[in-house]
Length: 386
Image 1: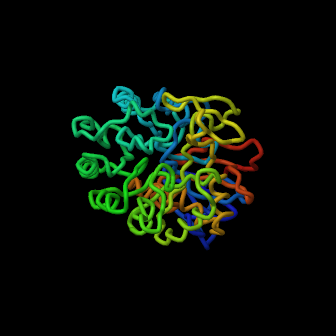
Image 2: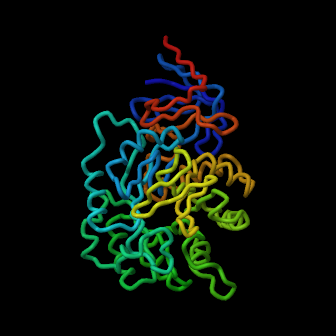
């Protein structure tokens, strides 16, 4: 067991008692007023917040999950540097054999020396998407929904979330089937109109993937997928808040619909995250990174190199939301969508995944399952032993 004193604690809501927690094994044991443990960490310069949960990340640090799914563990070991304590490695539209290979990589389990971010399963973004909104996905790999194609798409096999275009033929049956299995279904890369989206929501769709991007735009007589989602309180939505994918005015509009903690920040990062500018892989596509923007040769936006804290700062600047409100979009909200009941919040009994953050929102340290797995070279952390 160890205890820790922070400058402030965000649950993600501000914790208004003594900023001290204790950790026993991999769980948070107690919050607030308590005796120091025999092993104590003085982190009074830093705020303690839940670890970030990224539900859509295609790769990082030079590795692309769609072309090299075994790299999820290598990347997972480094993601705590960005404050990420859990993530869904995302496989974009690929061959069925490539998806099967990815699931096998997850089923094989983490290496014995793995101390990285928790991986509850994959986000399969495709292949059941609209060819008219394929974005950076290879059209040749798109497929029409067929129950035989998703026989192994189960939680226990590593499928946690699937993005589907709800309007394509056969989609409703797949949405019902996956929902019954406990897989989160999200609408995206879609030409669905208002009514097709509502029908998909009735079948079990629980979220929209990167809201505004690769979907029908809002029109005053044809509100489309975006407004069908925003107008339905139980449906959550993810957002790429990098200042490129979505205009600040629309980020602010979406924020007005966040009254029930519905917004989820995502990176949608590709292999170039954490790397120099250049050319990187995303599935079968080559992506050029220039001025921190990821594009195909034809100029189409293709993922990002967005870090969680940059997205958080952008959201706060665009919407004037509070730090705790912004943190909620990286922690409690994605945990709620994925039904990770013991993650995403600082509370007794939850998994001890948390981040120590400087007052100017930089990552000082990250703990995963109660273990200090990353400490910035500049971080001033002092262990005390009695």
